[in-house]
Image (cartoon, rainbow, N blue to C red; front, side, top):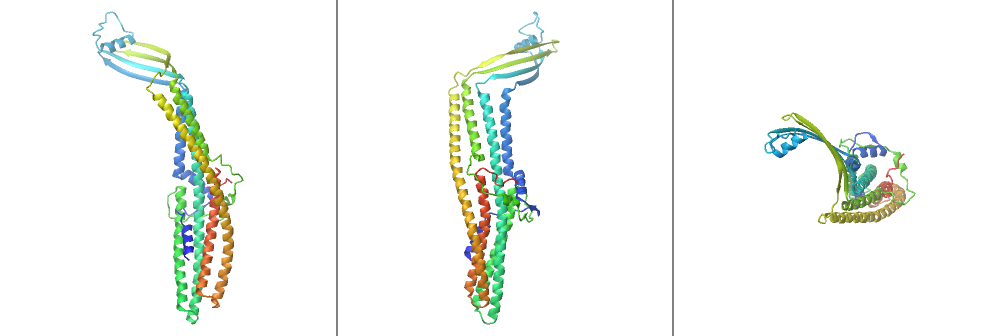
Length: 438
């Protein structure tokens, strides 16, 4: 019976949360998780942040427009003389050393446009777009993982509840055996020790039933946790014949090239390459065009004037103490790191796919064997009960037959859930949606 209890404990390991008393389908549960789960919200926020970086990079192709205004009042000769000239109020009787107090209201509008930045603007936009693509793929990865967790949580509920049913059947069988044994004991046909052995076994099975019920309750709460919903304490009702489980079919391909994690790293490689190009652009000249218009008004001179300015500027970094060389080296090292991560991920996913494939084959074989074992154990237990009632079987043999039946049912329960879970993991490993769409 110890092996049966260990199986029961394993069946209730994957459990955690509770939902409103309404029937849940896997499709609805996955949709709810993708909307409500904190993991999905974090991934969406990162994708939005990456799109904002693209918007920032796009600004390099648009003109920059600035407006400014200020009012000053001064007796500084230099500032006062400049204001007098801007207000068109100069006269030859002005004392340059003591122009007096001069006020000035200045309003300026400036338009600037970058004509060439050494390729840094283009590289920055390329890096931002690749980063946004990688963030979107990260969001898809989070969705796949979350969908797999939802299916796992739902199957854990089924597994835990079927374990309860299996142990409940064991309790009923032992109760019938104890009843028959008590009649035989009262008739003087059974030893007290044999009756006590059956009663002890019944008590242990009831204890296992209590643990199984606790595991089922914990599995329901885990389901709610995965969906990102607050705990209500109500029971979780799952659709018995969920069509989504029937849609879970074995993939007809072993190609994992579309795995979101791989595609995301490939996008990050492109972003890193663009960052190297951006760093190299610092060695090239920068060309900007600009134009401005300003208006000045003075009340102490009772004058005003306007002016404009336009031109081109060229800047070239001749020597910066090795700063640009350091940035190029740093970005090149980042590119090498991302390429190594891509290679490692490719190898790891290849292994993950093979492990998932073998795990599914193992689960299918275990399910087939466990189904035959249950049939044999049920037949053996039925014969043992009949022989025990006819006083042709020892109590220890009956206990052994009932224990083997309980173990077989638990094994079949675990194998059935594991087969579906293994199929979900195989689909996720290949980069497919864990739960096929209807």
